[in-house]
Image (cartoon, rainbow, N blue to C red):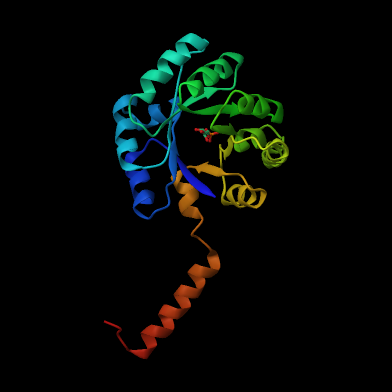
Length: 217
Ligand code: E4P
């Protein structure tokens, strides 16, 4: 399973990248806003740091303008994946950009039907938004399961990039189902290392060690 970091915070991405945890990065307009940085500048900095795909999202809503924005974003670095929304125009832009050899991440996917269309349009990645589905009292993980079955039935090459990850359990569920990639905020990836029994066990070992009066170095 590949880990993408869902962030435009360069310092947070670097911390995980230095540990070898980062196979790619996803950004979106809200994350760019949060970074307070210029989209081209911050995306370039991320692309220079990370060797895997870095998704940068178009903001136009009409296919021709999406393609123009996508081509501009793709010029930032060779590892850019152009992110387009799952609308009819987005699918059209996906087809055109993929046809020119660009990686396309089709985002804002909320149904298996949408995921089929993205695969047919040549998307490299489909991004189903698990957390936002759960927020609306549907089952985001069930959608990942459905897409996995459908893509496998027809040998679609589009990678399932599980997005809108809110918890460690989301990541475990996605891994169990066989999502190709999860993109998660840095805090959720770091939370994967935490376990209350690890903390308790370490505390006990350190207490006992102190009683031995020994030193290792
Ligand atoms: C995906 O690529 C999106 O950037 C992201 O996962 C959305 O997550 P959110 O629903 O927590 O905003």
